[in-house]
Amino acid sequence: MIHLLSDQKCQIIAHAEQDYPFECCGLLLGKFGETMKSVHETFAISNAREEVAKRTRFLITPAELLAGERYARARELDIVGFYHSHPDHPAIPSEYDRDHAWPTYSYVVVSVAAGKAGDIRSWELEPDRTRFNEEELSERNSK
Amino acid sequence: MITINLPTALRQFTAGKAQVELEASTVGEALQSLSSQFPDLRRHLYNEQNSLRSFVNVYVNDEDTRHHDGEKTPLRSGDTLMIVPSIAGGVTVETDVASLPSLSNEEISRYGRHLIMPEVGLEGQRRLKNASVLMIGTGGLGAPSGMYLAAAGVGRIGIVDFDVVETSNLQRQIIHGTSDVGRPKIESARDRLRNINPHIEIETHETRLTSQNALKLLANYDIVVDGTDNFPTRYLVNDACVLMGKPNVYGSIFRFEGQASVFWATRGACYRCLYPEPPPPGLVPSCAEGGVLGVLPGIVGAIQANETIKLILGAPDTLVNRLLLFDAWQMKFREFKLRKDPDCPVCGDSPTVTTLIDYEEFCGLRSEPQATTNVELEEMNATDLKQRLDVRDDLQIIDVREPSEYEIARIPGSRLIPLGQIVSRMNEIDPSKETVVHCKGGVRSAKAISSLKQAGFPGRLVNLKGGISAWSNDVDPGVPKY
Image 1 (cartoon, rainbow over the protein chains, first blue to last red):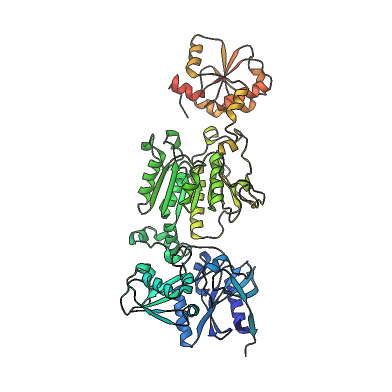
Image 2: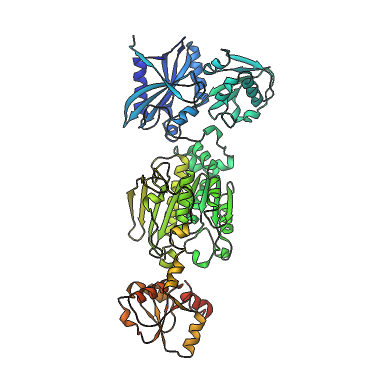
């Protein structure tokens, strides 16, 4: 299960709609709990990279991830997952997504159809890599 | 002693440890040793082929090992190794940027005009260098497309041809020059491409593309550019590309009209979705029969090169699912939307063509000789005709070519009735005399004889074997060949 504040959900949706028809992506920073993850902040990556995002599905480079990790560590947070958008495709991870994922992290996928965000769903990779399992995405109102 | 820092996601496989210390002399050794200590970790670092997953990056003391020797990067005691994923995902598969070849300073100067455009950029130019394209044919279409792809820096270009350069090629096949006449086309093309760009690899395949060798030839290339001039090879290229999931950049030309598209069955329509069946043999004349404006293949071939480069760069708006028609005489482009045919025999939902077939037979070319023997075609060769004329035998010669061809060259005493009018003007031929019918090479005249017989022409009809070309070769070299 992953907890997301309604503000963060709005940020992800706004990012996805703004980058349409290209894919957007970003980091989810927060804390790993016993049974669930909580997101404290979202960290957008692709805003400045539209030109690249056009041609490539390579969303976050290791250098960007390291930068995000440093940012998170300074705030005593962890990277708990990633979000990305599927323009004109459902919010279901693709085969390609599965080949490029690790367990434990949450992979939040938001579907954007004709510029409007639709479904937002979260997925976790089965430890034996055979499939993604949908996890509960619980939304709490921001204080 | 080497220290490995593990990302949070992988700690569940290392008994919660964030750091592991071990002995190793290279990055590869360190990772192997780590995954033998923690076997559950292995599948998240290595794929089924036992190579490091493309999104797994290893940093040694904050330096990406991809910029060094990858897994062979040496380690010294005290080094810190970090495993960092790059996050990839989304709808399509693309090459991992980090694995693309780099450019030398010389290459950077050469491709400067590409590099400064964000749509290409350094990354796109590296994609071009990383790409491989197979050109089927180095004729009218292959000449410009090959030259532009070489100039653009496509890293590996394969060329398939079995022909020899002839004088009549030079009006449009600008990859070959006057001094190349008589040379194999692939040699001449290879030299020209090398001269344009010495930084790329050229692979020559001096062979006819066949059902036996096509899959093997195509396997080594990312994209196929179809520069063929005949239906059997065009269907062969299409089917082979569909079976292998490769994009087929199509172009065709005739007289003043050209077509271009990208047939990529995994993304859209294939050639068979557009043309399920070949036209009956002989209905569509070849360029050798019908002629072609020399600059037309230049335009269509350049469009093919353009689309090939866009496919490599991952550009939007390629000719996938679009058929472009070009008329050079009217100077008009038109465009048709294509749709994948769910009933397509090769790329549809339940394909019936699952392996390469006999394309000569598919296009009806195998059975043609039988059809002509059925109507018992009588033939005469050029030297015999000359002898008969010399002894003033009473025969008439009917030329079934077009008036423009008659202007160029004619056999003395012949009378012009173009093939399209032969039946309606049948009464102009005297059935009491023996009639020799000829064209340029002997194909149209055989058709004319067959049509005349079907229409009930009562006289004796004889086909001139090899047409006026044979007359020029064997009887009178003063008659120009075209």
